[in-house]
Image (cartoon, rainbow, N blue to C red; front, side, top):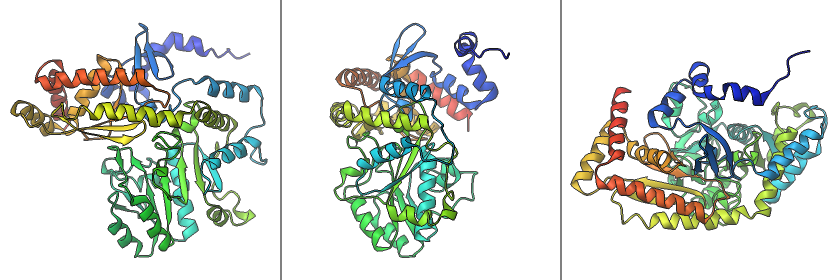
Length: 461
């Protein structure tokens, strides 16, 4: 008999080797980066919106795994659903049957999307986007998809073709012949549509990079232009969907917007099993799957697996039962208003923006001479260092995990689990205020760390 696999024993024996194992066998730059900025923590357990280290110190999670942990970590309803589906010993992924769980999850998703008719299940956000790109091209017979500058839609080749950040695209060209416009630029959209080869426009209702919201009126006006030119509106709701912005979908903040294709993922997983979904209108699916010969023309080996479907059904149940969409709206308004009240207090706090529990905090050039010289020092070395200077003490001193919203951006993005409440808002605002007080004092450990970041940035040139 083979030796019994013992996961608990393996982690007990080698769990402390995580950073060394990553350095030797995975992306070697990840542990290097974490050591440099002081993010090299070792977390022992997690629940809800918190982590704990070996000394039982709690850490508030304002990052939610880049939005994956919409329900927080280890929600008991999702955990039980997965135990139940494993215990059921279902004949999963036979490939030649129609099991009920995918149909039930599709039905539930579509109940929140009454203008859409069908769903394709994949395994991630980028796969959901790839599906939308393929379906849009095939259904319209056109080759180009428009996207917005600074957009992020994934990192596989098709999704990368509609990625608005050059730092992700550099070195991976040639990509698909897609074209960028500025978010909100209807003139550019109409100009490109007049060329007659545009299959659609893919847009995030709120861009994850920088937390920039589509300007009021842009989405409904874009929808009208696209329909006039027989092109599709594709809403990338991978991060904004499932309650993040205070509505089930981010596009629902604008009256009358009904995308032809919608991409979701991240929070649908419950943080357990990767899942992506592309929702679309019936006529689009009818064109793609036009005959029995084309029944597998687009598929995913692990798409619709029972564990992912069970997790998705449990997530949607929790969103409804615990009224988390309304909680995201209410708690997000509280957090945003309390942070916005600090803008007049701090020179380097430029703007607080966003919707629901997707909030961007942007920093800008101060007016006073002493702070201006320090700001200039950071900007000369590398843009984005001040935001990093704020993120690091939030973790190291206040045990709050956040992120800088993108490369060379002076923006912190807050995307906490949708379950947080006033207690977590109080903790974050108090910690953020303490960090900003120190930053505006012109000295202290925060500026010592800033000089370290400058040296590191210069060394990496």
